[in-house]
Length: 561
Ligand code: CAO
Image (cartoon, rainbow, N blue to C red; front, side, top):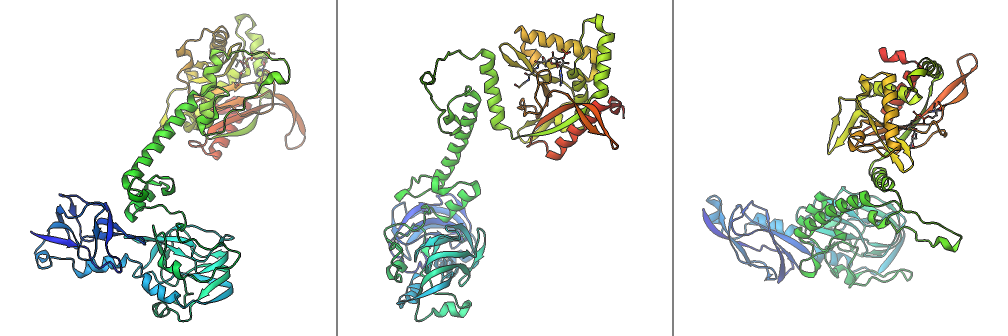
């Protein structure tokens, strides 16, 4: 092991550039080519890599220092004997660093003779971007139909060391964009067809003509954070209709951040444009990106909590919506104000949360209950003296149990990234009470007969009406049923009772003409509306569940199959 000085390699025309970011500290183990510091001129920011692997002994620069080629960045306890023989930055590192500097000079030469304008459909190509090869398009700033100015940034490309904006060599309207996010581009690649006017160089760049199929001359790429590119100073004439480019205005809207910070932001899905930079000149640091992520997560959790707490007609701001309309109803006539009941406040908050958080879809179907209704009426006649009245809901509960057994996803609940499958069959049913809606739960419906279910349901409904339901009576449900059949309606969308994943709505059964293959026959048809949580249940599964339910209700012998 020997200690070597890691120096700033040849960084092109840049001199006295400021250190804006320290990417390592004493004690850190670094790989060869790993970025050590970020420097920034008024034209570009770039990361200075290590010429070899080792452990950082001492940093020789601090934030704000100005460095040039040859400045010592740090002392490194280098790995291997070869290190001792090359105390300063070797060729490879110099090449790497040189590669991060866009070759502004050659492009200026290319553009400088521009004096005439070419009109019509113009091909805008990637200009000479130095040693960059196969650089990824990380941002597309324009779209077909946009009007662009000469020099306006079209896309941002990024290598592992630097990112830069590629400006338009023509002014006019974009007819066609030829690149998309993630594409890899090289010098000469076609970016866009612009209908308008372009700068024409009298002498095309030799490098470009040698390595690419006649790329249209273009201004130099605008390195990130460049307030005024060198190419801007020699921009071709701008058509009168277009506002002239103000070189003091930053091009595009790309925020000020180093390639490594941009990479972290991309991986976390953080939109850099929304991050406030805390570094010099508002530069976005990795801490800023991580802080943004934390605040978004905290905000989302708060919004969900607020949504759950929000009273009926509450403040839309809880969901980031415009406020609830405030109306002075007395301006239009006499009014009376009544406070919401305790149950309405509680159920309202639950319904609101469930409606907002669960992606609901409702599948509507029908069941032919002609025979079942005849059986129900006959059963009630036989049991007249028992005092227990059997309603259609009791049969539907039994049919739902059969469907849950056949389609276990409907008897599940989401728990984070997992599904909890229940092996019990407790069915909730919405009960209308003078104070509002409650959902008592009929336990172990799979082990009970229709008469027992009817008796327990009657008892629970009575307790609900009298406000005597205990919390145990309303817990442990697997799926709920909301029956409005005694009242009316054809179909509706019931709201899922979280953490359940489905709810069945029953509307009023009616006699309908049904085609039996030969003729229309009068049948009693019960409408079934099954709302399901689309995160857990697919449309096809919901359709099968509802269809099976209809078949069982049409003929209970199916349960035996
Ligand atoms: N089609 C036609 N008639 C139906 C029917 C249907 N789908 N369901 C029930 N009926 C009939 C019954 O047979 C009964 O008729 P009879 O008096 O002639 O025998 C009548 O309607 C009343 O039934 P019911 O409501 O007393 O009994 P139920 O078992 O059907 O329902 C209960 C019990 C507690 C669920 C019900 O009383 C209730 O509260 N329903 C409202 C539920 C609700 O509010 N849901 C909305 C939730 S979302 O806001």
